[in-house]
Image (cartoon, rainbow, N blue to C red; front, side, top):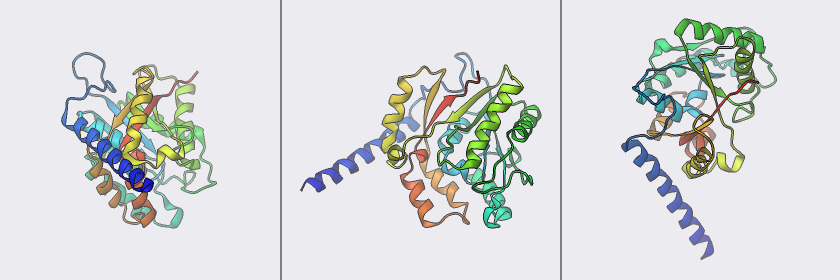
Length: 260
């Protein structure tokens, strides 16, 4: 009997969390991320990821928020994910996923640099990363960067190197008019409780100034599944479970990167 009550409570909490997400999507947003307090001003945003499918598995709430509000989003993917010899396939899958996520394909760039190859244990040069990212900033008038934090959600070394590449850029070539934000890595319990984690994320955001941290709810969580399904070479059973139960499908916590 106790197990029945526990399961029923979890189901109710799961449904209530989804209702909160869908209610947010149908009501005027009060989130101040990307706003300056005055009239609407289009921002030029650069999302920097390590592999094709990072955008769908981890950043879809952020992508949905940015594109639905009319901002200009560019995606820079620093490798084609060729660890298993499927790089060319994965590159095309990325473009298909970005079409689902409403990111113009001419604003999606994928690199296949010999020094930036996918794989655990493959260390990426932070100076090289900073130089590449700086080039994208200058080419597209970028005024805001979003990337992984220093743990990189899954702890993948390539994710972490991307973070440090952005930090090196900010530290070595100060860009006074550029903001940088990182996707906050959560503990393993929060990572796999699906939409229920939105309550923890909202609470975290309330405890910090909007200048430091924002919680972005995924207004269209179904697009996360559709986008990730475009990565058919990666769409195996455990990734299907990940997308269903991962809190990153339903909400993103973004924290401002401060380089001192």
